[in-house]
Picture 1 (cartoon, rainbow, N blue to C red):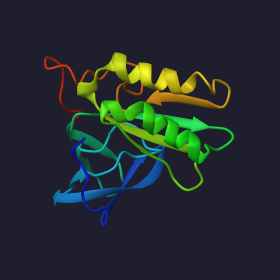
Picture 2: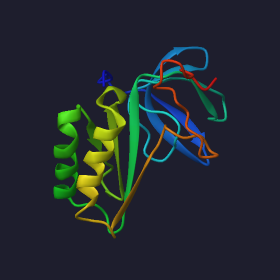
Picture 3: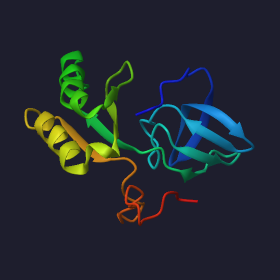
Length: 159
């Protein structure tokens, strides 16, 4: 995944909601995202984003990580997080969840491949089909079209 830096600085990202995300400033309006957002979609840890004063952002360079968002009702238990981490460890994925555990975010290198990512999440979901839902956070645009940033022939940014 490549982004394990100090999370002492944050940037506010906005896309329907606001979220403070650990980030390293790179210059005027430019930030390296250090952790995949949990509520704002469109970017993942390792991405470089241009952020306007109001929090609206555009990805200018993809860092090579896929964001998987999981929402649960009731909240996830610690064993759920551990099971999820166990599914993604072989893919070099990182699972993060806030203290309330109503959601979790998995950051996994795109090099793991979409079939492996989907198999890992399907295996985890198979024992909790009615209590959680998941989706990719940075694979599709707002209209449901594929961003294809992982394809060498496709775009590498959204700017």
